[in-house]
Image (cartoon, helix red, strand yellow):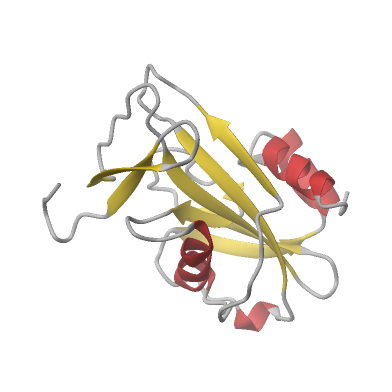
Length: 177
C-alpha cells in the first residue's frame, strides 16, 4: 500500500504474530478481527536498580501528563528489537547500540470496537547511565525521573502511570520482582 511518504507505515500481523504482507499507515489505522500491529516497551534500569520513566506531553490525546516507560510502534520492515534500538534513542537519547536482548514479557490486546488490536513486547534493559545522559529528544515527554518500583507503584495508585500491571507482570516474569 502506498501513501504519504511522511506517514509512518506499519506491518499487519495475524493472531499468530505472523506477518500478513499488509502494510498500512499507522495514523488512523482501524484493524479488523485477526489483524494486529506491534509495539515495544523498554524497562530501562540503571546500575542502582531504578527505572527510567517519562511524563507524557500535555497535548497527547491519550494519557496526557501521565507517567510511562519508553516505547512505541514497530514500523514496517522493523523487528521488535530494531524498534527498541530506534525508540530508546529517539525518546530519551540513550544509545543501546546493538544490544541483543529478548522480550521478558509479551501480551496481546484486542479492542474490535476501536480497531485497536496489538501485540506488545516488553524488554528489560540494564544500562550504565546517569540522569545527565537522558535527553527528551522528540518532544513526546515533558519530564523524566529514575524511580524505584515502589515509587512507580505510588504513581499507579494515584492513577497516573500507564501499563503498570503489564510492567509488573514483565518484571515478575524475569525474576526482578
